[in-house]
Length: 324
Image (cartoon, rainbow, N blue to C red; front, side):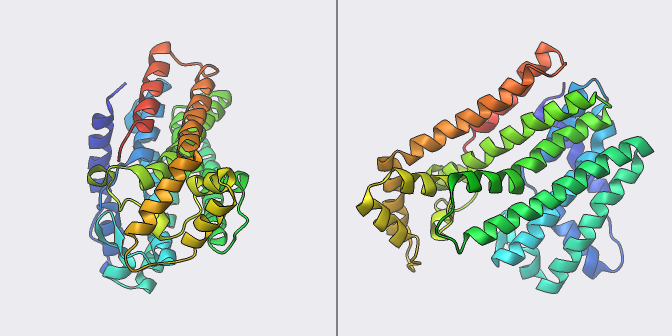
C-alpha cells in the first residue's frame, strides 16, 4: 500500500489534468478555481487507498476518486452561498469572486461532471458507482437541510445532531471508501463493511472538527478558532454542555448563543470555560474515541490482510490525533 503523500501526489496530478480551459470561461473558470484551491483531499485519498487494500491497482480508482472530490467541492460552492461565507481555504469563495448566479450554475455543472466520470468504467461498475453516488448525494442534501433547520431550533437533540453530521459529512467518507471497493470488485459484504468503517470514522472526524473549532491551535487549525461559537452553531459540545449544566449555567449558555457581540473574544472564552467545567469537552473526546472504536471493530469482519487492517487503524488514529 502507498503512503498518504503518494496517493495525494498522484491524485493531484490527475486532478490537474482534468482541469482545463473550456468555453464559456464564465462557467468553467469558477469550477477550476474551487478545484485547485487545495484542501486535504481526504475523500479521494480514501478511495485510492481502499481500491489498493482490496488488491486492485489504485490508479483504476482515480476517476471515482475525482468524482468524489468534484462532488465535495460542488457542495462547498453551494454551502458557501447559503452561509454567505466570504472565504474558503483562505481565499475568496466562488460567489464572492464572481457572483451568486455563477456559483449556482457552476456548482450545478460540477454535480453533472461528477456523474460523467463514472462513464469511464465498465457498465456493471458504472451502475454500482452511480447507485451509491445518488444515495449519498441525496443524504448530503438532507444533512445540509437538517443543519439549516437547526439554526432556528432550540430543541435539537444529541440524536438529531449525530444524524445530521452522519448525513452531511460521514456518508461521503463511507461512500469514498466503498467506491474504491466497487472499482476493485470486492464482495458486496466487504463493500458494505468498508462503508461502515468510513461512515463511523467520518462521524468521529466531524466530532473532532467540532472539538478543534473550540480547542484547536490557532496556528495549525486552518480556520478561526471559535468560529462555531461566533456563529452560534449548536454542536455536540454545546448540546452536551446544556445537558450537563445546572440551571444558571444553562441560562448563561443559551443567552450567549443568542447574541453576536462585535468583539466575540469574551464570549468565546466564557463558552469554552463552560464546555470544560460542565464536562462537555471531555464527553466530546470520549464520543470521538467511541466512534473511532466502532470503525475499528468493523475491520474484524473485512477479508483483507492483517497488514492492511493495521494500516487502516493507523490512518484512523492519525486522523483522530490531528490538530488541523
